[in-house]
Image 1 (cartoon, one colour):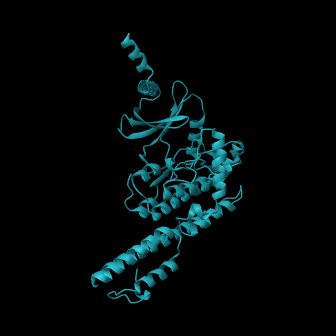
Image 2: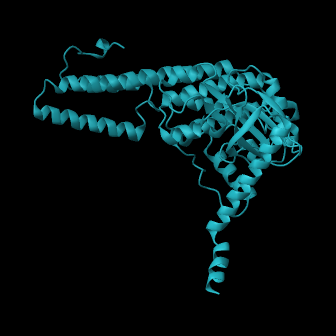
Image 3: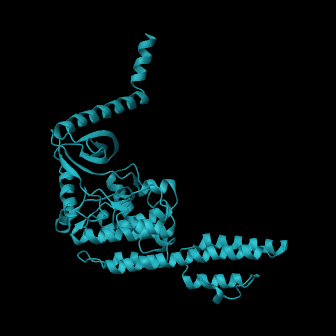
Length: 395
């Protein structure tokens, strides 16, 4: 009697439910494996590596070449999303910033699938294991803008730009700008929600995209266009810089419609304020304002946007070199000073660092001229070997 009671209690326990769920997924995976072998014997499914609301992603191996790829398959037959994505990817063939279509087809039960190169690290994965520098984030932005320019030339909207859909070739970025700006190093994936601009009328009165990264127009149920992809990228860059977004934790238990409305209102209230761009150079405000001023049917001036990001990268690079020089010159001074002077310099250095954090002096809001003046004032207080004025500084 007691054993039966314990057994019934175990059947109702969360651990047993989890076990059943795992077993169910395994059985489903094996069914897909068998169907794939019936459909095409070229690939062997190894394991599941991810899933979305309407699809699953598996790691597969080519039986002849032994190369590994990613297989994306619909959860339910005849959903049409994979078919639409295949059509989009064919249009975007040979664009370096797009993960290319390797193969596609349908299973015996009419589930569409496609096969693409296996990319192991997304931007969301990357920020979990390392903090990205400002120059690295700006390089990512510039790379994605170049890719969006080519996508939009085909009159295609991505409509789901988020860290999960931006992949890199390696898990660790060693030389940020050179690697991130090299052709094809960053890949934009998942065109399941993508539409041709002429078909975007069907997107009216519905929310389209990811809750955290969708544009304000999507929250309002308006017709979407090129500017909405840029706005989503804008939110991605803020996320990479801060590790979160101001509305990330604002979801409630009421309803999805309530969350869509609430987060949309927060985005609208914060857009064009310093709250979102305070950890970026001042030029980043121009990017934000430009997005806001674009009309629905207006094609963005990508050359101007790219020039803006290049300018921010140059400014950030100069700022970083100045900060490194400041530390180096202080170390030289300390070698020639007495204990009392060393204590004074360390106190001034700590004060400078604290101010940098509070006002984002280091590589953020302050412009180059202001940093030069700040460095000049700092150097003038202490003995140095050769540097006597700001004009003696060489980069």
